[in-house]
Image 1 (cartoon, rainbow, N blue to C red):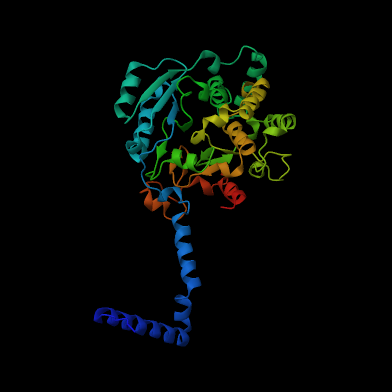
Image 2: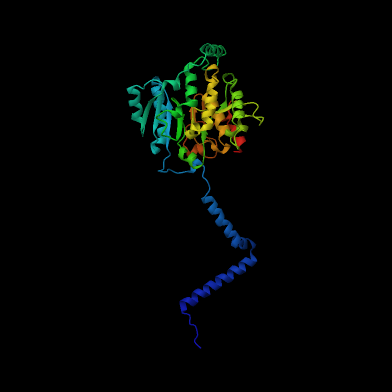
Length: 382
């Protein structure tokens, strides 16, 4: 009978493997910790944990630069006499973010921009800049508004020392931002926008693309500052909101953020909380959608933009909270932002350090009594 022969190197290898296996068995039987560490279930658990970490959705400030771009633009509503305030805002967002991403800008004005204005802004942006004239019927007070009634309201607000209480142009701006900017011909080609105003400040490097973050995570609306509205400027607004939702309950999202707007949870009373809309990043398909357009048209028909002083901030905030699901609203702690006199300075984790921020963390409106941000965080379980 023929015997199987094994060459010398193979024999040595088998001997070593046998010795290692024997040692493993002996140590496993005598050392409980080693046995647990090398068990199949433990190794499987470790592999699963590694896979879970690999597929974890990273916080925004952990993301890295991407060549991919969203269909998005900055939008800046400004006047010719705000040239240098606008230059400062654009210079800061360029330095802190857009010098890498090169998103375009759309500048809007109710009168034509001067050639000097256009020259100065085109000289500092790293991308395309377009300058648009707002259509007259999108800006000025409609003819159907009772001017005598509107003037009496303005005079009363001036008497009560309410900020912008006597300004018609401020009311025009609020109505335009509520229902028209996303329908401007220069904005129609874009899906996402980031609103910037003259003389605002960006205090931190933005280490991720907020547009792509929102697109990839199914977000609709983002903010950095939230606060209470002046109740005297919107005395009838919430009543009209309730009337609209009773007429159109189909527009109210199932998992909405009503609990952020109404402390009693029933929606009977509005707690005046809103997202401060001088900074907002949002999906214009939401504003252009049926629910919001019906909502805006209903509110506009009540005349409250002129008979009172409804701001676009509560109008946008209420709509986002009711018609989008709560998890589609994004708070960007990472973005250090200032619109005088209020500043949001990053406070979570190492956001301040990673963003190389210039703001004072203790000078943070989040901790002020006028802020609703802690209420939002608590509502969202953050």
